[in-house]
Image: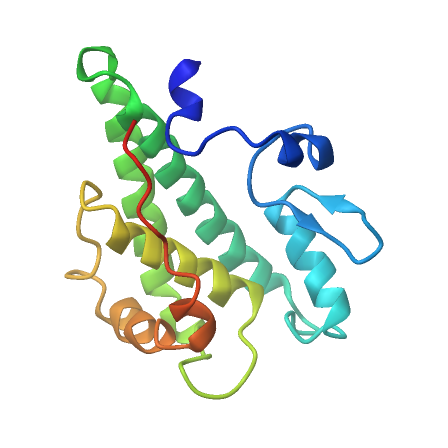
Length: 177
């Protein structure tokens, strides 16, 4: 698809390290390319001595999976929105909107598990992923508002977004085409 390269120009160097040629790709100090968010997070967790995951991490992994699915739906919507308006499938867009809403509702129901705020502590993988999903939803003006009906998630994310690591990695504008 030609439109697939319209937002971010194709980078041959990325394809040399990652045949999938998409972000994220983390290159370890040993030169090993990790081209999947989950694998990159597990690698970073290993470097932290397991501080990103709790010993009984199943709840965290469950919340991470919901947030990861949320991001996947956001990206699928973005790809569909890049198509010419006459070629967009409204049923597909609605399916992704519904999926996004279900994920945000599930995260709101579990917002008490989101403990790490702006100050102190190392966030776990679920918190990082939820934070990224919230930030992306805020950034894309064509994505609908999620905060109004999710006060606990909104409260947590408003604080979490103040972390220096979140501030320096805010999305930057890219061309629409």
